[in-house]
Image (cartoon, rainbow, N blue to C red; front, side):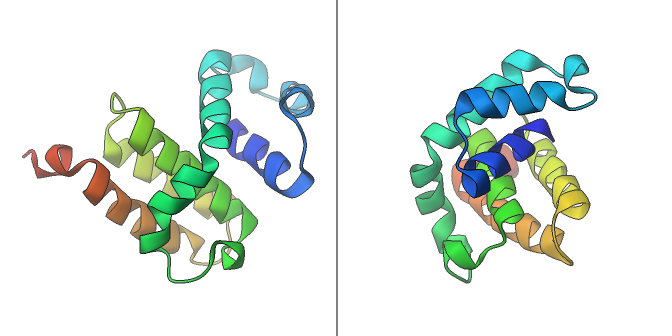
Length: 132
């Protein structure tokens, strides 16, 4: 949740990492979050955003700019985890993304996020998906 908020601030508010960190630390509950994981995921998603957009593009039925800002952030985080964090099962990543989309996204945004990330996982995690 905090990573999504940070990505949103970066995309919509064009804030730098330091400003995002200050804002995140002021949010209730951040002190209980895994700060190292937060920093890693936020940095990876930001640094690799262009590559992740290319990975996601074949599965999106509109231009990147036509996707809502919050759903873009959720897709970037999902792509980041699917591509760079094989230690996290793909189903966990997709389920977390769906829940984030239900909480923060628009009507039926969770269905869009699910469809896109499920197809991306099929390409990136084919061996994991085939396991019984």
